[in-house]
Length: 141
Image 1: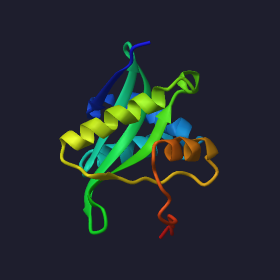
Image 2: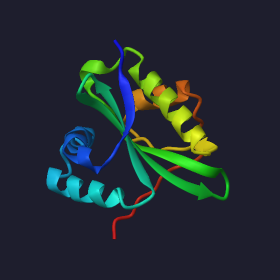
Image 3: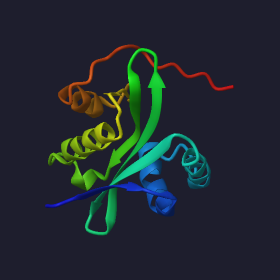
Image 4: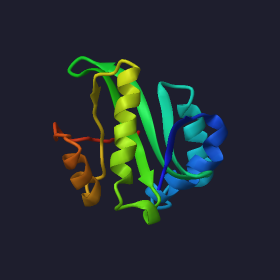
């Protein structure tokens, strides 16, 4: 099956939000997700999408920055592919496309966070060559 990968603009928010909502196990309302993602588009953020024909079946946010320890860096965020499309190499294809895209933009490293209990993602990122460098901490104010 031939998939299409592309950067999505804000016109796709209505399609992005339901996928991100599935990733967050319905812990965040669609309205709040829509508000946050709209705001994210005004920051150093882009959203990559995977299409099967005209259907958006996967998303990956990309945060762009420069870090003292890794240089020009991209952080994939809220990576999600519809369950029916998993297990057939689509994630590998998607990340290969992302690697090429961010290299062409002049970025030199990728770092990411993944939920502690998301074991399938841990295996995927290990297989992609990622190494664990530390822990991610969060404190709500």
